[in-house]
Image (cartoon, rainbow, N blue to C red):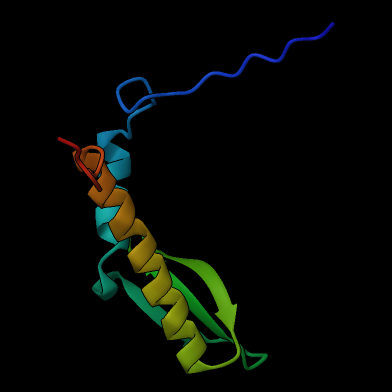
Length: 96
């Protein structure tokens, strides 16, 4: 007979993000650190500026400027949510 044991993590036992990771999330969640460039094949590429240098890191490719901007907005929203959860678990309901 085989038994499967699962383990769950609570907030305090889960690996916490490092200060370096949090700084990266703060940087990437600001729209001023993003740009859209047009590639030779006509596609548009979204890029964010590196924290350490003046280099730009490519992220996605889209066919339209609206699609590229939506991709940037979705990335910003994603990392903003990650930053929100560094403050601890979010209470959604309490009972009395």
